[in-house]
Image 1 (cartoon, rainbow, N blue to C red):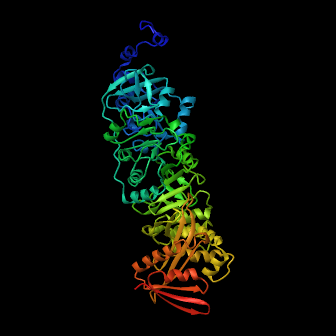
Image 2: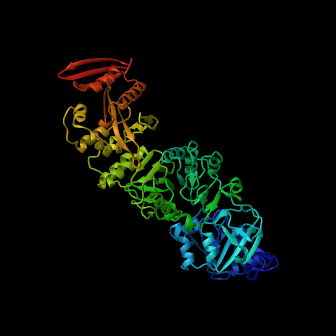
Image 3: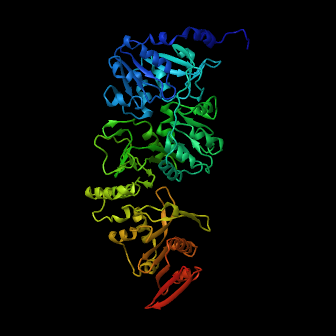
Length: 629
């Protein structure tokens, strides 16, 4: 091609550098275009255009009835101060610490809306944007500025605004992805070298680490993660150092992912879409984080309407979405945005990701919260939500709820099962009252046994795994009060002979009152272990072993039963060995048992145990004593 010829685009679009010079303005001159009654958008998070915000507030006396929209920002929000009530009215899509008081006092508004749906409000004109104040990086050689660390709803707001005023910040990191705006599309540009706004996360608490450990058990190799920022997400990441090929598709992230990227844990190789890329809409953190994302092709930022689209989210296999809650009621309703009637935050992207992960192949939607608030004074697992509290995630959307006391799986469960599961992960000191409240509301049976829930601490340290000869991994764990349905399924899966050998009777069923007896354990004098083949909903019980101590003799009666398909494969022997270890650690002298004469498998277990065994045959039943010393 002849280098002297002008292309069509050259003729239409003058040199952007010439136009750039004409757009440069001081902060004061730039905001002078704002008129009374204008509707304004201010950039998000750590990319708040601080210089422009200060200039806008300095011009307050020349303004009136100016409406300001944004999601959470890290900087100051002086326009929400009482003295500016006549000049500015803020409308929050997500309430941050800098606007919470103004919303609570009625000096600012709150619009509850899914984060994925905010851009459509701008583009459709249902929310008009006259002026957008945004922060961008300096233009590259092609004239493109990056939105930096906040693309989220900023891009759609800017594209919908009648006028765009950009603070061109030399300190802003240049991020990749769908995160650019051309100089020609910006009306006024204000040079700046303002330091970036930092988000300083507190070190995870002991409770956060306990929650993080539970959640980490749900995360498999090759999972794609969504998580926010704060103690629990950072604690989760701390337990993932042994995972392989994790991916990230998230609304936001912070410093916590850097170590896992550098350690080769987060590779994004197994992602179903955007393979090899960390994909998000914004980030907040330290200077280390901003240096990490700067010009880094590993990381792509995309607008919220794409990142938070449940259809996009669900395309990732093994999508794990981790979101926080303020309180959860016994039916599974999740309040995440208010303290009773007091609006605290917002809907945000929780429902977007909960629904997206729920529809992912192998996906896991997780709601995480400490079991108590106010230094342990109140329970966050509650009988009913506080008056005025909003339901962000409905009981029909909830799958996993996690506290420091364990994991409750609710999806597809009836109200009674949900209530019992949630009580089991509440703080022990509140469980009895919660069960009483559940009885009063007829959420559970009136005769529901209280003892298993009343302050009994689940011994998580006793959980272990057994690999069978065919490489099947079986989880061995203590029985939980919520295992009643699994116990019944196990019972009805046994052959008549196995039932007869275990219960000395040809039982056709087990009344609920009797099932409760088997659930009534204290992990000390009454101990039971179950062998479980894990699954998304908790797994299938394939063996149960238990002992019950007679305190007057310090001997414990032992029993074990294994599903017929797994008998004679070492599972019963393992259960006996492991329960023996537990009993010995508790100072128990030995086991006793009654074994039917023809139950040769059980007798072989005792004889091959390695301990001294005494037997005596009475009326067709072997009376067994196995000495620990």
